[in-house]
Image 1: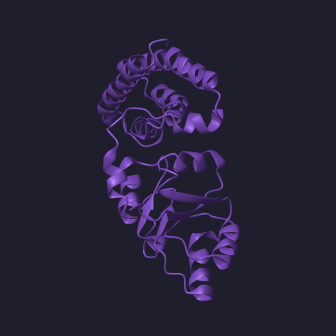
Image 2 (image 1 turned 90 degrees about the vertical axis):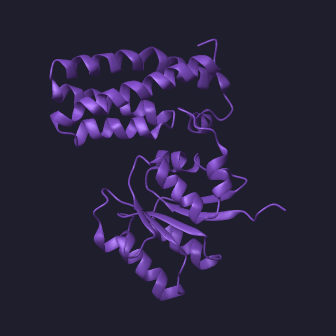
Length: 238
């Protein structure tokens, strides 16, 4: 017997981030209704049944996450579980009202938490670990396979030189340039939904101290090599 489809309401002002979030879930298992503002979500919830999960930005306009949740609880006795997307994880005020606070780029463990919360454990464990995914590209391409292939070719042609330049700058202790290069290459990893590599880039660009960079650079190089090897193995014409 097929399990009933779960329903998520997503509030995120970033349309590309909406696409990335949706790409982590099977449309057969989960229906995701996305809004760019909290007001749209409020009106939708008032007119329909409560979702299985509400995922919203801490800064969701016009009220923000805290006031949006307070309004829903006061007006319609909203009790569905909530996951909040925050700038950082040290948000004590909102954490008290949410099952979990997550940050962007979404980590694998955050998506796994949501799947378990929705009782999608079979889905969470069914996929073999991959170093890249094409769901985001497929959504952008709208069926244009040439667009996907060209995007992968650009990745293979442009990212390795950037990673090489990054490692050389680290070896030369040019840490500011390391951060700038990491920031520049991060969207390429997000495009292929390798959020581990994207998170490493974010750490190198904004958080890591010089003595913490060596380990992160090694991790990024390894993850990058896995992606390139996987792409070449899966697409012989690249």
